[in-house]
Length: 246
Image (cartoon, rainbow, N blue to C red; front, side, top):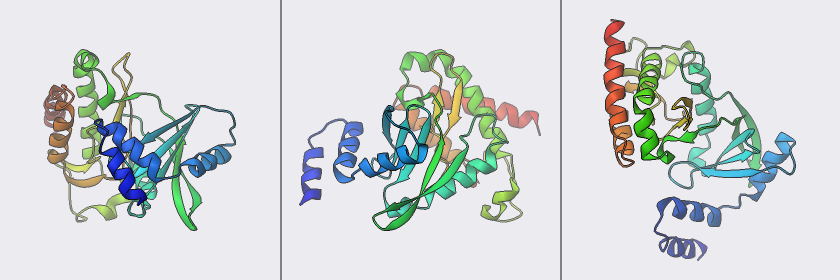
């Protein structure tokens, strides 16, 4: 009955973002998550911000006083994501020209089951999908250059710690082929005052692959925000980098 009530109520909310937030709040009791984060961080009387990941109810991020962030997987299908994300960020942190958060795994008992929680220092910045069209137009070229340098550096890399995840040991990077974030569209943060990308987040989908489809998905994501030119410019800049290093 509760699920039916939640679905009926959320169906009346026109905003998808608000709809996801309301469904998550009514479906999951996040008070134990907040209590866990406060205790682990040994913090009291702090500002608490709560964010949801893509898809609405798969994960929740609790930020304490804009200093510490805790990412909780909410559904069993996501319980392995903290270890996966940490593995990839550890592999690419020294390679990436853009900042990747340093992460720690903290175990938590949830409903009698131990789950992994991802803990990291909060990184300031605005998700690309929340930035105004005017700001994106102003810094579009700068953002594109940074993305191109990032895609090139990651794509041409071959970290030893994740070699076992390649499609074959002989697989080599090529043009728009190699290691990729694989969900780049809405997962980088930007300083709205300078156009600098402050971090690339959410690495659990990273993969060694043809990542042209990820670029197309990012193009579609930004097109819906009137900033589709960014990915076009990113590919142009990436091609220049690739050809200059051949």
